[in-house]
Every structure is written in C-alpha cells, then in structure tokens.
Length: 265
Image (cartoon, rainbow, N blue to C red; front, side, top):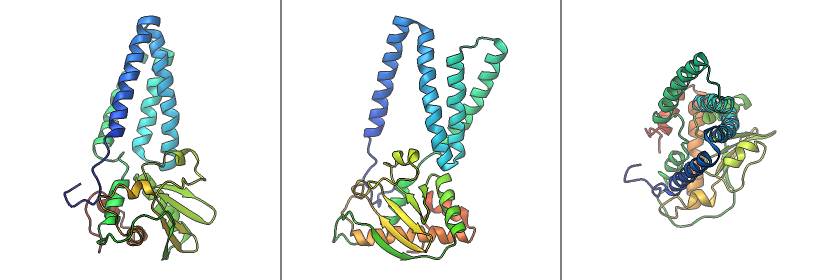
C-alpha cells in the first residue's frame, strides 16, 4: 500500500505464528527421527500432507482457483510418496519430474499474486471515497438500495470473484452472499452458513443489496470512518464491479482489484 492508505499496516502476528509453528513441527520431527527412525517421520509428514490435500480440495472446490488446484496436486503426490515409501528408480524419477513441474507452477502462481486473497484491496477501495470520521462502528447491516442484474449474471459474477480470490461466494435460495474477510475460514467448510463476524455484501435475487461490515475489518482502518458512508461506498464498489462484469469487462475488474483504481469516485 502507498502512504495514502487508510488501512493500518498488515498484522505480523500470523507470520510470527506460522514461523513458530514451523519451528515446533521441525523440532518434533527431529525428535521423532532420533527416537523412532526416518520411516516414522516420513509417515507423519505423509499424514500432514494428506490433511493438507483435503483442506486444499475444499478451498479449490469453493473457488475454482487454478493455483489451489496445483496446491492440491502438490500435497497429494508428496503424501503418496511419503506414505507409500516407494524406492523403485523409475517411479522415483517420475515423481521428481512431476514434483519439479508442480513446484515451478506453485511459485509462479504465488509470486504473481494469483493465490493472494484481495480482501485488503477491497477494503482500501471501499474506504477511498470516505472523507468524514463522524460516526464509528455499528454492528447492524446497512441497506444499500437496489441493483439490476439477472440471476445468471449474479451467480457468474460471484463465481468470477471467488476464482480470483476477491470474495468467497455463498449461494442461497434467495440471495448470494459475498464474504470479504480474512476470518472467513469456517465458511469454506460450511457453505450454507455465513459467519456473522465477517464482512459481507448480500445481493438478493430480487435486486436488493445490503452490506455488513464486521468489527474485525472496521478496526483495520486507521481512523473511525463514518460507518454509513463506508457501507455505502462498499456497496457502490461492488455495484461497479458487477456492471463491469455484465459488460464483459473482466480485465478492468482485475485491473481495479489488482491495484489500478479507475473507478469513478
């Protein structure tokens, strides 16, 4: 983010927790290796990668993001290799070639941002037009008027955003809920339930639109932005994205959420 960002710097706690967890797992692996041998360590690591495979299958299924599909394949072949422990030279050779290819693809998607969730960018764009700081957070949903779209346009739009890791889509009988949050992990595994503690925008199939900005996301802003203005801007942003989608201008959507702000404000 640039110096004009209205968001606080990204929290370093998840990175620290990840580093500490990695150190603990490494120390545990070394201990098991010394006590029980290399084969036991391989089996333990194989179980871990198997669990990772299942988790990433769910993430890929909910988003259809190609980067996560590569992640599924990578976890899967590593779990098979570790659990099966095959030593046949041709099999090991094929495994290594596939592993190298998948690793190259994984790092390509990782470093090009194609596997990065863009919830902070969405919050930044929503906050940009908001100038006042008169009223702070309230937990209530905000009615954001109406928009014109067909059911097919809305579902296609929701799937497009999910595929590009902008929002997580929850398709219900009378509406589509788009979650914009770093706290939405539970929604991957409970697709019919939207966590009330996450920020989301609701598009009803009748055209009605509403916004819920959760406290966790509101506290990411440096100032207590006027809540109603923030919610209205949040809705306007998604209406703009939806209009671009209806016109077939997907590249403009990707340009906007990727950092180029050409939205009229």
